[in-house]
Length: 470
Image (tube, rainbow, N blue to C red):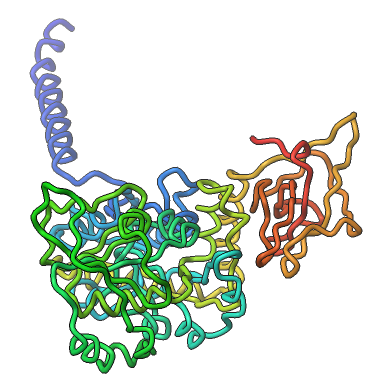
């Protein structure tokens, strides 16, 4: 038996060596293969509540759609939030799949189409016209785009408008940085003045008044009558005198106060060291002809165009005291927004085409697609909601119907809500303005989010003690 064992040992050793070699080969082969699991796609976006935002539930309504499509395509989405200009630049300049391949949500324009492949629309955003109830109450009647010729539109940097609205906005404007500043412009209602080192001639005025741009914007010769001061020096250290021009609709008083309390349009001939800077106002540099058009254009009552949901979110979360003073016109412009894929990456065209195919399959069931959007919107609302609470151990909370046409609570129309009901505040207690009449209204105005009276359109008034932050 000892002899038999000694004869079989070499065979066992050979078998063990072969098995070990096979195991090593398997490990080496396995490590050389690509990792299993979904591929990663890198996208960029910016803060635009409720459509996109780093801290929003599911990163926003638009993000829910984009993520759903890419997951069906077999991708895991790496979504990077950054300032909009950077999000745009990084997407546009990328040439490899390992870089940012797309950015959203964007409106399609001819300029952007030169650099990007556009997907089919992922969402339709309702753009609305906001106005100040005290400074510009007549804007409530804006019912179609042509009504905008009576108003000056406050525009945002990087913001694009549909052609039917764009036709009533100057080609060259003073842009403002964000939605917050747009509402501040409505509230401040400051005038604009033009500052230049050169004296304006009647010939220049006539040339501007007869230009195609002035005719397009319905700017009349009367509006282009400009008042101006004699050459002015504000600081003895400043050796450059300058003229101050204002629309003829109002008379120049104290020039120093006028400059201090107005937004400025400055022509390029004004030296950078001229001491005309002041806090709390905007300054815009333009050539004389464009500056004159802007000066005349902004003499009209002002309105601000922004997504209805975005504007309401900014007002309720960042500017609650201003929300009571801002109205919303009748006209709504539904604007499609898409994902943009850079043309610098040769693989992005096929990626866009596959994205569209899956997106259209998703939208082929309108009920399911609407439910996807509604669920995302509801999650965002719930995250921002308050709880209705009662006093004295009561189980029900009383609320009055809020009439949006009369801009007031209706004390004779009382509804009851279970304690703990979720509500989304639209206006916090503040002086509510109804045209020029000031009404002392110390109520919280809110939508109810759950229960039998839940509605995104109906509003109710509650006592401040009935609202509890979450």
